[in-house]
Each structure stands twice: as structure tokens, then as C-alpha cells.
Length: 232
Length: 329
Image 1 (cartoon, chains in turn yellow, green):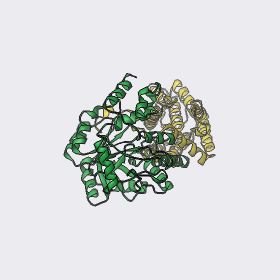
Image 2 (cartoon, rainbow over the protein chains, first blue to last red):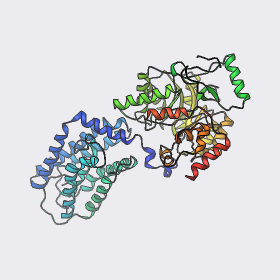
Image 3 (cartoon, helix red, strand yellow):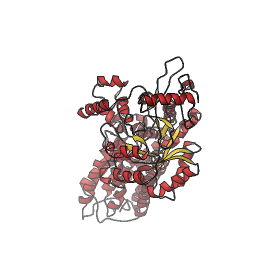
Image 4 (cartoon, rainbow over the protein chains, first blue to last red):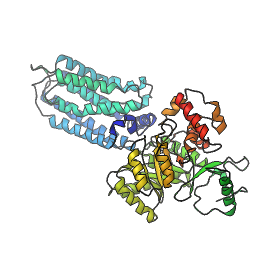
């Protein structure tokens, strides 16, 4: 690409905001009530992360997250979003890679860099926000309830929930686990920015916080946390 | 082709001339001679139902063939990329129908535009195979994969062959242009072109226009982006290359900005009822421009845009007035 410095994100925009959000509406209509399974899976992750201690708990969290990334990559990005954005096939591949990373790091035991309290609090807050509040952000931004985005079904809440749980649990491989979610924060933020969405900054801000806390908020002293959790 | 008493095309049931590649008959020839004698830079054909006075549709020649095209076409970037949304597809078919009913011919798309090609094909199939001037692009860096991409595009459109294929944003033009010229020689394509947009790569485009045999170039031109007036538009005239103008409204931003201000009174002097029409008339009144391709997803806008291909065009003084007025806003 020549004269690349003259390009703006809007130059790569392929669809209108109306078309983009109709995609969510049609997807939700077609797959309801699978969303409830996503919600239940999110609740299970929350329970396992907060209350449990056994090694299989952490592995189960990673497995659920991996399945969520795989499903969103396939059902939303590859099968639907790629219909209006040729780059979505690459996004789907990245989501599949994230699922693979979660599977591969699942059995890793890592107590060397547990999360500090601030990171755990932020992580828990981001996860709860992604699971419960984020579906309604679109409504507050003026979009239809039918176009809501939910954990395990669409990319943004799945990404934000993953960032939250990785921050909550800490661990040596957290940077590896956060790489693709952080990239998605940038991609999603740019997409929504070009569509002039009011919530365009949500994921980029969450991503920036994740970088800040993931990079500087680990403790050398082990703190109680579930063994065998993602990146542990 | 139906010709009325004035010797110009008389569209039956609001259908308009599609191709005029055959030699004109005597009546038509007389009309053309009259227009030439009157100093007209454009050719006029009537529109409207028989009961209503025909409103002339402004046509321009493709220099390499003499074929005539209405000066307003239809772009599809963003607006026709609606995926598999059946409701949106039907609505875009209505836009296509309004465009064709208003006399439009040239429809432009690209494999880069997501599902736009498929949505155009859906609309054309729904409308019952109306006559169009199909303009698409090859957009792939690999020369070897160009033919396969073109064939896939053709299937999406559902046309037997394309009228015009352009190398999108000059991507891989060294490999694609010989292939497109070969397609033209063998009768699988009627015209060959290249495109740029956003005012980029004008130096490269200039060299290609000088060195290659092209039927069309596509570039960005509007009242606030006029760099092409300096070298590229005069070069197109010199080289006998038709010019398609993209992004006439700067992806809607120009209209959005201008709509905060009242339409100037002088717009009525050239039969403009909206900023969109004033911009389009400014563009197509440049003698080098063959067709402007505004994109829209609104039926009323498709008709409004096509109405800019009728009535008076601004002369040089009016063109300066339009540009100066817009520059001040």
C-alpha cells in the first residue's frame, strides 16, 4: 500500500452502522435462546474463579472460555460477519487461535506471579460488566434491545470477560492470553469509531487498563488463587 | 431502440436508453448535428411518460467507442454491502429499480466491497434482468488469481460478461491490464480501465494513462477535491479516456456539512433542488467527466441523483461560483 500515512480508519469501512447492528439483530433472532447458555457459562466461570481452589476449576474456566472464543469465531465472525467484512475470516482465525492458546495453557500451573488485589478487583469488575452490563450498553447508546451483544455469543463481551478473568487470576502467561483480546479491543474500537458509535471507546479503555494492570500489578508473593486456571 | 418525433430515445414505461453503439439513424443524426451546432457538450435524450413533457437526460460519449452513457451512475461502496439481510437486499433492489427507472445505466462495484456484488446480482435478478452498464473491478495483488476473481464477481452479478473491468486502486495493474486487454480482444469484455480514490496515487495514474491504452479511468473529484483538474482530467481528454468520478459527496461528509447551510439561490438557475444535485452538476459539467457514481441506500436519493442528469448544466462561470460558494462555507 502506497501513501499509507494518508489513510484513515474510515477509508477501510465497508458497511454502514445500520448494516452492522442489523447483523447482531438477525443473529440474535436466529440463535435465541442460546444466549442463556452463554450467560450460564459466564456464571459458572464466575463461581469457579471466586470460590473454588481445585486444579480442575481453573482448567474448566479455560475450557469454557476457549469454547466461547471458538463459537464466536465460527458462528458470528466466520458465518455472519464475513458476509459484510472480508477481513472477518482473519478475525475468526485469530479467535480460533485464542481458543487454542486457552486450551494449551490450561494445564499450566503457575503460582509465580499471582494477581495483586487491585488487578483482581479490576478483573472481577470487567468480567461482571461484560456478563451483565455490556449487553445493555448498546441500548443506552440508542440501539435496539434486539441488537444486544452478550458473552459467549458476540466478540466484544467475550473479549472483555476474558480480559477480566485473566486479570483476576494473574499468572505468568497472562500476556500471551491477553494478546489477541487486546488486539480485538483495538479492532473493535476502530470499527465502532468509524461507525460513530457512542460506545466506541469502551473496549480500548478496558484494553488500556488491562495493559496497565497486567504489566505492573503482579505480586511475587503467592496469594490464594485457583490452581490450574488459565495461564497458571 | 424507440425514437420519438424529435429523433431522440423515447423510453417506454420509464425505461431509458441503454446502449447506442449502433450508428444513429438519419433523424438522430440530425439531432446530434443540431446539438453540435448549438455548441452542446452533452447529448440529450428525453425521459418521463408520454403524457408528460419529456425531460432531457444528459448523456456523454465514451471516447473510445462513441457509446453514450447517462452522466450519473450508481456506486455501491458501503451502501450495497448488506450481507444476507433479506429485508435490506429487497430495499437495495428498490434503489436499483429507482435508478434504472430514472434512466440510470452504469452500476459500479468491486470485490473489495463485501457483499455488494451479490446484492446487486440479487437486485438485478429480482428486477428481471434490466439493461445495465456493468462496471466492476479486479482487486487482488496476484495477477494469476485475477481471472478467477473476475469470474466469481461475474457470477455474483449474474451477467454474461462485464461491460467494464477496472484495476482497483492500481493494485497489481502491471499483471492485470494485459489480461483485461486480452479479455477485450477476445470479446469477453467491452472496456478496460483503472481506478484510484481519495486523491491518491495520481502520479502513478498519470503515467499509466500516458503509457497504457485505457477506455476508462476512475478517480475522486468534487467541489472540494479538485486536484485532478490540473493534470489528470486534461490528460483524459487528450488521450480519449472516459472518466468515472467516485466519492462525489466525500462519503456523505460533504453533504452533511453543506446541509447546515441553505441552498444558494443560484442553484435554481441550473435546475438544482438540493446540495447533492448541485455537487453532481458541478462534477459532470466538467467536459472531461463521463459519469459520476454517487452511492445511496435511499430510493428517493437515487431518483434525486438521477435528476441531476437532467436540465441545465453550469457553465464555466457558474462552476467557479459553485466552487467558491462551497469553499466559503
